[in-house]
Amino acid sequence: MEVTVGDRLKMFRLGRAMSLDELAAATDGLVTKQAISKYERGLMFPSPTVLNVFARFFGVKAAELLAPPSVDVHVLAFRRTSRLAKKEQYRVENLVSRMLEQRVVLQEASGQHNGKEIPLAKYAPTTLEECEEIASEVRDSWSLGVDPIACVTDVLEEHHIHVLEIETENAFDGLAAVAKDKEGHVKAAAVVSRKGLAGERQRLNLAHELGHLVMRQSDTIDDEKAAFRFGAAFLAPAELVKRDVGRARRRVSLMELLLLKKKYGMSIQALIYRLSDLDIIGPSQATALWKQINARGWKKEEPHALNPETPQWSRRAAARAVAEGTLTLDEAEGILGFRTGESRRNEPSNRRDLMKLPMAERKRLLTLDAERARDQYLDDGEWISLLGGDLLPDE
Image (cartoon, rainbow, N blue to C red):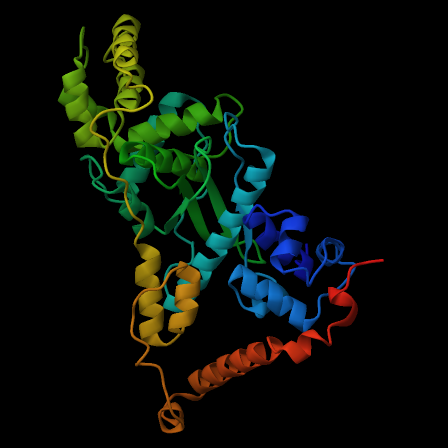
């Protein structure tokens, strides 16, 4: 399906969880709610100045509203247990789509991976036990050995899976997304977590979403249970856990679980499930542990929370692209969403420096200068007075 200017505008608006009224108000009344609705439905086409008004508000170039994205982003379904309101789900989906689209831009600008090595939907488990085997196979294929994973975020990014963090409600658990080019080839994939989570919850969420990426939906087992089993086995391989805890225990103390939490980077609650799944503890011991956790109030907030992991790939890729001249510092900072503090002294500042550059780079910089000059003219009050019907309320 062809992506229109209206589709792009709607994506940016929903990514901010804005209503038509709110976006109209953000333009200080220059554009009406009715006009925006017509733009999004393809009934009207915004003038260059109106496009520039929207682009400046959303912090992008007008060209990004005009040009269709180079990839189609498919957000995998929210977990069935998600309590997010529909409006927030739409916002998250559109925000994630935009973020992953930008990661593809960074991939291409920095000459890095293109998604070919991602084992997307490679496995088809029919039992929960098979999820254990799949987790082990993925670890083996990534040469992770049998020891606990020090940093899940690093492992995922090193194997071509972007880790995205978003601001959203506590009801959000996580999701996964895939970007494909127009021929249907996978260009990138991402696992998404909420900012502010304790490290132990973040790590299992990321591993859980990895399970959704690498495993196909099954007709014989619950997909959420399968992803949880995969994620737990990915963080805590069965043989390693049995070596540390024993193959069968009549009693496990909370102190022991706190030490295991530090080693595996998993919450105490996730570890209880893990020991139960591996039949290391029986139902009566699991029930006793849950009662102790509830009595201490640990079900909502556990002691010794781990620091969350911080994704690093995008910053490295942006720095590389700027150093190689495939992105300007302004472009890189626009993708990252913050100022890097990097000096702009390395950018060509005069005609002599410009002429020393390769022809392709000269054309790129001249095009950027032309876009900046155009934006300055479009901001001029005289141009606003010429907008006509695009800025006037509908009769």
